Length: 316
Length: 266
Image 1: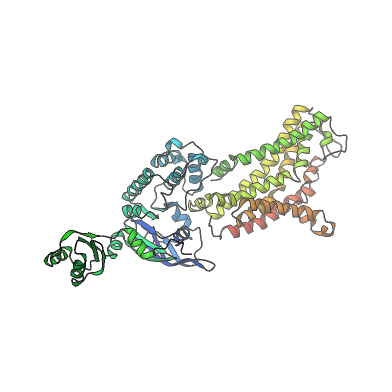
Image 2: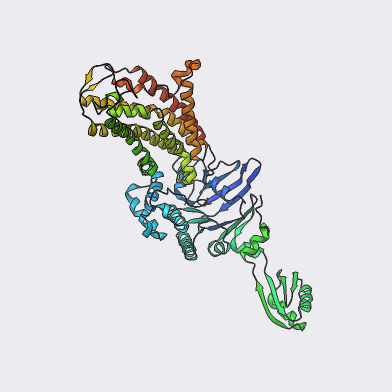
């Protein structure tokens, strides 16, 4: 979708965005760029400022400093024009407990500037079918389970075709099947060209669906790139299983591998451009008996922990 | 959105229950009068002594009984809940990103609260009319000035009186709407709104501050009785409605200033 500032305006763009609550710098000058058509994983520990960022992006909070744009249009100034193109799930679903699922969707559809009444009933049916809630459409929201509530939230975000979906923990409270369905739904939407901004703690989930990732901690963005680049930045490691672990370590060090670790029968080291096959030959020539030799790519979890630290306590 | 908002609020069990209770109060009053034979002239709340002769007065007695306490209480509940209730449900953030537009949402909330005020007073009148018609004879209505009106114009004036009562609550509703934009806790907003009404009523009873009495939003709540004079005495009613407009302007502006700029964290 072409924004006024050119055809390639990013779906989300922030420059030096800040949001302070008193002394707390919840968002501390972040530059985020979410390309159109990407599935963008927004990661960070609890309290890192992800939800605050999302709230500023959607015009719920006033930024302390910096600016943010959606499709090239300034927020919150252009909220009336740009938000109809955005579907959102923010900090869990919220609906009226005394209304049914379908009535709730109708209420929110009518609240917007573009809730076409003629097509409302069909769109509600389609959205409910898409998230698998058709059977519960007339049941009061009060009686919905957590997973069903989450599905209704998604249905509400999908009531109209959107160019951007902002999903904050969309699979929270869902069973494994539900999580899988949501993953497929996100992939399907992305295939149709919808940009998806996905905030999540489920790193394996993000790893499977996202094309881009940003990692946030203590209000700052620590890393932002395509998922392939981020994983590559962690470096590949070589793991060798052998009875002569000490000899193997010496050989690998001589080859220039760093971070050499010996643990029982296993030696591992960081590959810095050396080819695994060369390492293998060197080991064999040094008469080290190699039982197995593999390369290991760090998981997103390893990268995430490397960036944000191991601590279990909330950072602030 | 206007229709969706009305549908959403008036489908609530709470709102339905409040309206039913309001309608039941004059009905209960009528039943009590019917079983006890009624107070003698001049006893009990205004209009109550006339109920045995004419059921229409059950409505007017009902308004007299509910105006000082129960009607404003329910208005505090509904207006205090207007924005804070959405905030505590979390639906406020979804309405705003829809986007409903902050000014538009506030205006629609104000409209809904106003409709509730009128509906609440009408519920009292309707409950009284129905119970009065069942239990007592209906006939020409004797006004406070001593002359009589036809039954139709008597009922007409009763309904207008209830609308005047409803509109007289607008000022308090505006206060409730404002308080509701300040907090995310609906109960707090309701209590604060009731507090304002109590404060206004207390000040109204202190002769030392009689200079401000005409400006208190509770001061003219009984002006609706002037509709039952012949000819109708409009002075107090007009003054009351003008005063309510002033409260709407002041607290409506405050609510707007607050709501259009506030950080929505709920």
